[in-house]
Length: 212
Ligand SMILES: *[C@@H]1O[C@H](CO)[C@@H](O)[C@H](O)[C@H]1NC(C)=O
Image (cartoon, rainbow, N blue to C red):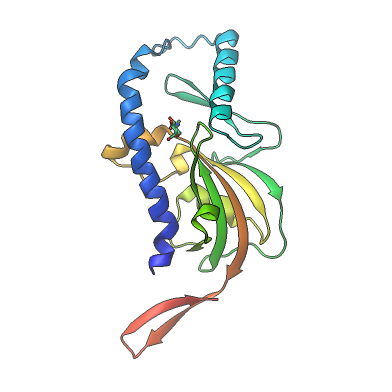
């Protein structure tokens, strides 16, 4: 169903846009980075300076409260968050604002949710609130990037959570999107409701899935 593809298409488009930006950045910025290969001598002053720089960029981008900082040192990324965040073994980092009530979604069920997506600078990239209608995705159908699905899997209706998706749990990447593999994504998600779905066969040869 076209609707099932919705979230995926959105992230994919975003991915392309970002790749473009990163390709521009990579030609000018990376070569001037002081960190060279193996000598990883962390200077606490540099770290603090990078963090301050990061916070300034976030303010310019109107990043929301308690937004994480992504401090890059060569190809390493240090995700700096407040203590309100939980880090999973998978690499997913999240913070619950509201826990919600009821059951968590199961594979095959449809989740209806709002989200606001941000890039590492805290710039809002995408918002279903602004689009005017929530996203609907069936769980367990690979309609979402893995980190997003993992982040929603243990949410409950009414729950509000910020999810930080590391590159390895992000959108699939190929050669043309190589640089985007290095990017984190941040989403503020509000799980509105969960629907049961069933397959319905119409006149014997065509079937679809209805959720309500
Ligand atoms: C976030 O998006 C803004 C606006 O498009 C852009 O200027 C900035 O470079 C982006 N940050 C990253 C880390 O991609």
